[in-house]
Picture (spheres, rainbow over the protein chains, first blue to last red):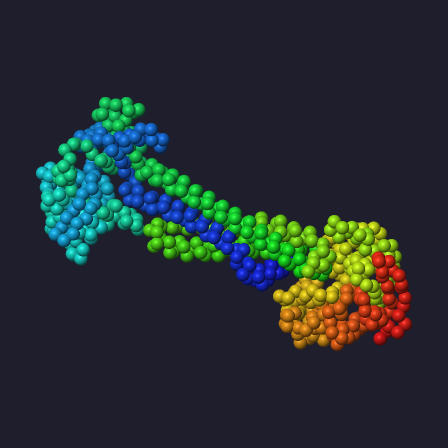
Length: 409
Length: 221
């Protein structure tokens, strides 16, 4: 009997017990769909982080106050210590001391409530200098960015992110020239930033208000000279390591500390992506593991039903043997049935995963990116589950003696 | 000696017999006499625990299960009391089953199955499933299945046990006809009227053959 005929016979058996076949497949369907979706969610999260971070610019270094030497987190205070000052930023901008540094954008960040006559909106208020648009790779969509004079004088002006402008000035063609007030101080909106388009879901990049640094400090009542972050643009991608070394040496020297005592940390896009991905990966592995267990349970379900099927069809097996089916043929037939159930479960599972990947992002605000590799692997796995868990029932069927099988009622 | 599960009992004791090619033999005996065991051994469905069985000169009592399956497929056609048709398959698909295991191509199988069904008078019932046929028709499908491979021997185990008298006559007439065409037929029954159609009657009781006699009026009808 050829493989084609074996498969056709197996397909008939699967089809003639429709309900049972569907229930048998259910475990595999759920398992495969959840494995593909969890891997897709993990992949989607990684892609999202990657695109958000790469929007920062690939030749960007981020200097943060405090130190975080390694992932063990022994040295805390990352991002919260006040060890980075405006004079540090100015020193980094020096062409002689740091020839590989192209531009430096010191930044203070705080939360502030912006009021208009009709509404208010809480956003992150960024205090910056004129280099900010260049280093952060941001464009002004309408109006203009503030000038160095305005920075020097602490002018009461602000540039809004696209989302912030939309929240505060709904329906207005352009908010340029309008007033917003922060804690009673009125600021004139002089520009709106181009949307960063870094990601589909609510990026903070577009929900922001940028003011001259002195203005921002005055508004939040901060008197210290400390910075939240210093963004440093290297002259090129290749100059990134050199720029890193220069910044490191300069700041250590300025702060009078050794490398072990460093009170700042420098990270690049790559290291940020890595950190974020490590977290995502842990989650994906965890969830994927749970999904894989459900797949295993699904496989055991196939074996269970196949064993029931062997018992139930004992007369059929006996008859087929009496008519000349060898044990090998019977074994193949039941193996083919289990494989078909596994494979069909896999195909349906993939179908459901595709529907899920299409519908889920809208529901849970998380991107899902299905990978061809994971899908192919799922298909192979479902087939392997069918074969693997079909072996025992199939050999049970093959071992039945025709006379015992025929005699049973 | 025949083993059934953990209980051992002797279903047949010292049966020594020979059936020649082309004979029509009826094995008669009450239930529990060992006639089913004899039929299973004759049909290569089972092997004797002691002694030997030679089929067409071949000792089949030492064969592997796979070889036995091939012997059954090539040389023996079965007709059972319970018909044993697969309910999900139409008549012709039931009839073609032995051909499928013999490796005959699909087109040939369909043609030969149709011819076999015509021979038993069911040429217009190819696509009917067993559930749509009467008991007599189902047994005729089973006879068609038994003869489709042109086997040397047709083994019929109480083939009329579940049939009314009209259907019984039709099935027995078919067996007569097959015998007339040179098939060896072994019929197992407990009804004497049925046994009388055979050329030779073997009576079996408590695992022993108690009588082996020709039927003067039978066989040739």
